[in-house]
Image 1 (tube, rainbow, N blue to C red):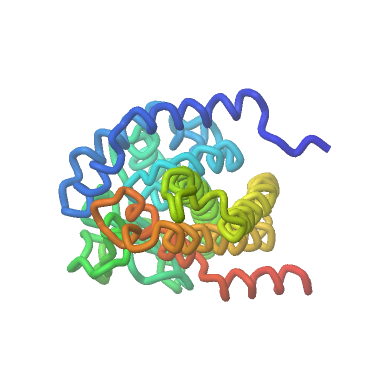
Image 2: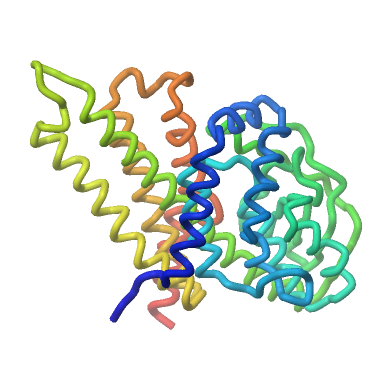
Length: 327
């Protein structure tokens, strides 16, 4: 069985990697964390022009069709580059609007989301009550436990976050009622699965970036006159980190192919834990310099833990995996 991306899918991922690699993403991330969204918005627009967000919308609304595997490949690259902004939430909101089947709502919001002209944040019942980057989002969607989809008027006061470029706030109660009923609840469940899947993809990309930077550092840093990468203990730590990431990769592809809740939860659990383990390895092998905010490494270190817990903590994902196995 050949369980690998096609040549076309790989080319798409390489296009994104080259685009983001040529941009000064760390500068955009630092600006975003300081409240300046300009550089991040410019980068967001360039990413959208590759067709990334079109993969989360139907063709009837300027999308390319709902293609979770291709979208996951793209979000691995977003994680690898550390792109700021509510990318997961924007894609999940697009899926939610498509799943609702309301043509008027879709025509109102989807073209802007697909083109990268607008970002969205989204909160769903059973998930985190905090909206991501509501201050930068054009649309703040929220679904209540009663099955009401509302457009909130904007985010409240920003809260402290481990990742300064992942700005959190509580959405105000009320707002414009867009839809209600069982179809909203069903669409929210589907959107939640997509959000969990794409967060897993981001986790994988973050972990790969952390490992790559740590390997390069291990080649340069010397102790006792030799690079630390030559020490057996360091080799073992790096190999264990690589193994965790490589084990997560096929689980991510399997989840993207099926969108089964249990498969998606397994992918999120494994990718999130592997990414966090990569952060711990990076921090240990870099030593004290790894703590400094001036080092670009810190931008990925501070993403690993929040992304591990976003759209499904490890305990929630374990419970979902077990529930799927006992059905």
